[in-house]
Amino acid sequence: MEAVDTLIARLRSTDDDDERDDIKAEIVALSESIGRSPLREYVESALKQELLEVQWELEEVVEALTPPKQSEPEPEPEPVDDPTTRALRPSEIEPIYNDPRGLRIYKSKVDDRWVVSQVDPRVGQPVTYEIPGEEAERIKQQLAGSPYWLKEV
Image 1 (spheres, rainbow, N blue to C red):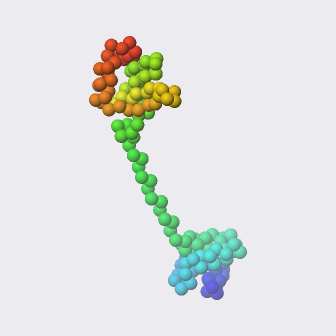
Image 2: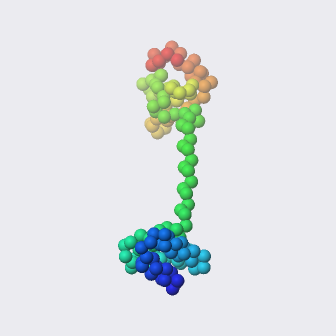
Image 3: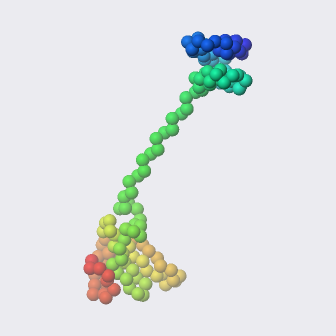
């Protein structure tokens, strides 16, 4: 590390910008024999005891000895929100049938699915589930003429 101390002393004593660049290049070249990490640590510790102008020059050396940061991988694009491949949200359904005894039927605003909500007699809580198109047609036929239809389907 005596060679590094000698180069830092030369850096401290010169005012010529070209010579300073050459000295910094020599310090960086020493990393071939000493190793990048030990040399960077030594220069960082020596940097703290130097004049401000020399510190700036040594910071450039430290930057040259610091390995480049790993670039962060690009985040994957968020998948397109396709309502046909997931459960329907409350904002995507509209009520079409409301029986005061606990049966409610909702129709999807985005496709042809229906959602049925009815009270489970064993626990007294509503249970909601989607029904396929053919079952929706069957329910529609069974409830034809009922006064509880909210919309014409």
